[in-house]
Image (cartoon, rainbow, N blue to C red):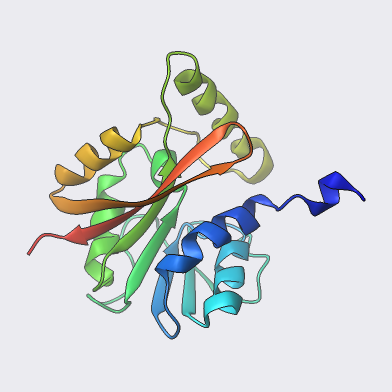
Length: 185
């Protein structure tokens, strides 16, 4: 048996961990959708309706991708049930505007998947490793790393309510969190 062939892909691990927080028939916008494979797999697993959005189109899925300016989402308020940001915020020098836009277009809040990075050596090393995506796809560098507690504090300052839903790992190095971020009424 080929051990490497039986190991789940990065996308499969993300989907396995995000899927429990989605429902059939939800309207979901994935902002910073990248190759679209996570959204395609989540659509296939949940029958949720996905709209993909990114600043560059390198979509490898069957789902349609819309390209936008990276600042203002081209949708009316509450167009979607949920917005998703999967490993997107740390690639933006100031993620607050995009998060505010995601909250504006999603009536039930935003699912945020991010790294939970801690440690004197791991923090700068993570920035370097994660910035190499620029070489592959032109993805912006990793501007910062945060622990779960730092992410929660970041969202409170918006102001928004953030709840930790789940923790998971990708391989031995990457520790990750899924947070639900909601508007404060």
